[in-house]
Image (cartoon, rainbow, N blue to C red):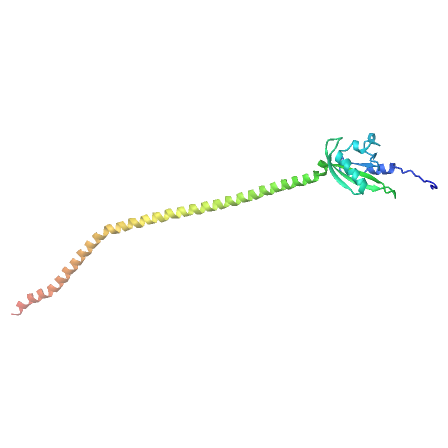
Length: 220
């Protein structure tokens, strides 16, 4: 037996105003769906009361229906039917009061804008890495250049020393040849000197004998 019924109106204007302020990126937007899947709020006013299946891809509509059944959020990658851009849709079901009926909030984020900070970070890393590589290569070039110059100077010094050694060796060889050429003459000279000394010694020995013989007759 039904005793009576109580009804109430839920003003959507404050909710829609808050939904319009949800902005994570430049062109992302939020959508509010009722329990039947009809659009309650969309940035495009012409889509009010339209079924969400008319503006989203089939995989997104299936995810919305599943979320309304089990109350679990989902994330779906798809392509926007309106803009043709790749977007990621975050699906968040919620209950209205104690009704146990799930409404759904959708947040559509363009992938290029969502990934822009990542791309920017990667670009920065690449630029910084390239600059560091250039600096390292410049340092290596300077080190190699200095080492090459030092090695060149050492080689030049060794070459100069080798030339000096060769010149000294040549002089020594020439001196040796000169000495070798003068050795016979010196030997002959020494022989002559030795013969002269022997003759002098002989004459020295003979002179007393001769003097004695010369002196003996004078004694008679």
